[in-house]
Amino acid sequence: MMATATSAPVEAPHRGRPRDPSCDVAILEATIELLAELGYDRMTVDAVAARAGVSKPTIYRRWPEGKDELVSAAVARCKEEMPSIDTGSLRGDLVAALEHMIAGIRENAQLAAGLAQRLRESPQLARVFREEIAPVKRALFKDIVRRAVERGELAAMPSDITLLADLGPSLIHTRSLLMGEPLDRRFVNQFVDHVLIPALKAVEPKGASR
Amino acid sequence: MMATATSAPVEAPHRGRPRDPSCDVAILEATIELLAELGYDRMTVDAVAARAGVSKPTIYRRWPEGKDELVSAAVARCKEEMPSIDTGSLRGDLVAALEHMIAGIRENAQLAAGLAQRLRESPQLARVFREEIAPVKRALFKDIVRRAVERGELAAMPSDITLLADLGPSLIHTRSLLMGEPLDRRFVNQFVDHVLIPALKAVEPKGASR
DNA sequence: AGGATACGAAACGGTGTGGTATCGTAATTC
DNA sequence: GAATTACGATACCACACCGTTTCGTATCCT
Image (cartoon, rainbow over all chains, first blue to last red):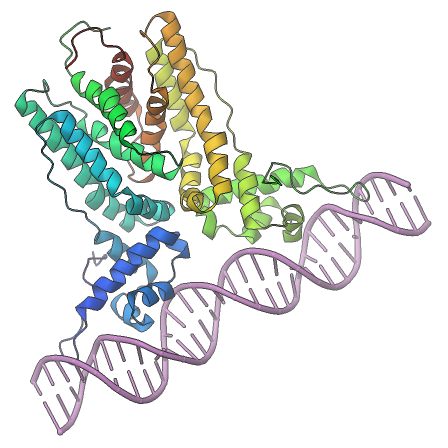
């Protein structure tokens, strides 16, 4: 059991010509690209083969289960590494983190769009998304806030830090996906100054409440 | 020109047997249902016909342009009416509005998921979403804030009210769509108390900034 | 060297889908 | 009553896709 899509395809025997590892990465990268461009349903295995410069049997030799496993493997390969952000101030860190996310949103947003309905149907894919992709951004945000607390910029860590961490990615996804609204510097500034920082500073308000 | 998908199908001549209007609504409702269940690509015209209790030519007689126009017409029919919310307090209104949205999210989230990638490819569909669906929620939020200002609960309308209005729907969509996280009362309370209200009260901070 | 395996190219079968056409029947106008 | 149009049922065509097979060649282990 538990033979779900790891990044390693079906293992090859130890005799005869070994598999070309460059084929693996070419296939998975082509899969991600086409997934983002066309979505799950409109992505065809033939197109993946063509773009990867690989023949179709080469793909099915590695993922005999077919399209589903191929897509899961490709998505699992997408864990983006967490960038190290440290500008010295809370506001600077938040702005930098958001701009970093916006810079990389083009592909990721389209990817999410192409996979959105599949997430409801494939628990395996949902697990990959939930356990591999989402925690990275949350960890980055937590780190920024933690350092701000250590510097004394904030009184304490909010108890619902996860909710706050989701705000940015959530807004960015929605704006770039559903409605085609701009993700410019003005948006980042407004969001940081009028939403994130007020929410963060609202923890244990020392002044009068209400 | 400008003959884009209105809710009225192709007009019938005035002689002979008139079209059955009940067929129109049956077709559009079946389209919405299947769209939410399967997404754009996996939804077939045959399935729509079957669920609507209608034959396929009956569909193509109304939307000769095919699937695209049919989907656009079905989505355009989905303007939800704005509920009238007035609990007397800002916090009560916000909680009520969010819970109303969460209650209706099941179908809408799946619908959005099924259409997400199509929104990038069909400007017509994107327009419907941007001009018919989104403004409703924003107007509701603006109304709530406006009344809070009139009651004196808030100092002034925030300048970036649209950004704030998008926060809730955005979070709800993301949580129910990408990651399967709970949308319970605890979530609503945390969001309202620790994000929305602090952001709203941060307008024109009279105390010390920074 | 020899056996075993991977590779590319190409073709194939089966299935599902979009969209059209045919035919007989029902409903409405002139 | 006659012409006209909508409706259901069914069949149909063309196409695209998935997954498999075949074949000749290239590459590696023993």
